[in-house]
Image (cartoon, rainbow, N blue to C red; front, side, top):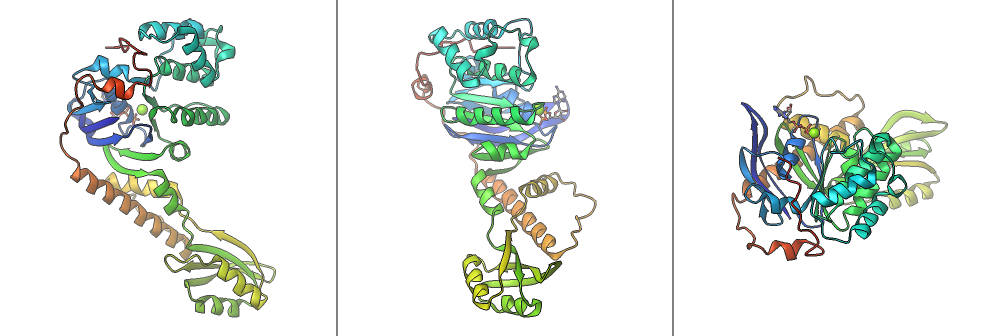
Length: 382
Ligand code: ADP
Ligand code: MG
């Protein structure tokens, strides 16, 4: 649905977006993640035709954004970082204005009514936009993007500045939209992409450094190999038993003590889920297991590792973690970060430079839910 190839943006001698390529399939929700200044807004502004590119091509639904901006923009609803709201209009006036501007042909009352239901702004229709809370303003911005029912929706930092409850509401809304639309959202908050996106594309200093399915990352993070197990029983014998047990490749006792119970850190062999066997073995020995905690990696740390590494500037010193368990976790996170970076680099190398374009005029039937639903001017803002 969206294909970005070798896109570059220079501001004078400064390269803000440096030869990035990625694709978004129809119906996918992709999170565009990166620290502030990474080049997210610049990319989204080029993608939506607000900004010209220095080099490269962008296609939306087979339409080249640079060659045919009007038709490309008809396929896109955009919520920029600063929502383009008119504070002295009421919500109702503003949405009607967006409807006229886009030359929307859908039944006006029904279409705008449906949008207001989806984004839950029905109760503020008559209010002036300047008197709304930040959360409501953001929803009005989203409503504006939905006018004309475009198949592609692009959100630039949609939850920035909202309170935690509003953040959850907007995330739920984006997930709902993802059922019927192709969505790209940018954010510098990792939890956000993890919560709503099928795929994560990470940009740092203008380059794409990772492109991975969210579920792959989550699966790696929730590994079932390392546990802290709290066992009540004679420490030395318990430790000896753990070390001799088949399926466990590593065991050590941690300093913390709770009555007659000690906590042991264990690691199982690859592909072995040791939990049930461990439970029954301990039960047989009458050494009650009174706690078990999986030691997954932290997804934050994996991404900090990705960004640190790809940025070319290492942190002055490796973070020193005192306990070996922490060190093991940090090593696993670094390994994961390496894998993500390598895989993305490999795929980028294999990416074709150019591809055939979709047949002229065909994209409309393919990508527009109600095919004559918008004959918009597309809001050409330049
Ligand atoms: P993000 O949205 O990821 O925070 P941006 O795309 O806004 O990042 O900016 C990427 C880089 O380009 C930043 O270093 C920013 O300062 C720079 N930049 C953005 N817009 C301009 C501009 N119009 N002129 C010069 N530099 C710019
Ligand atoms: Mg930005």
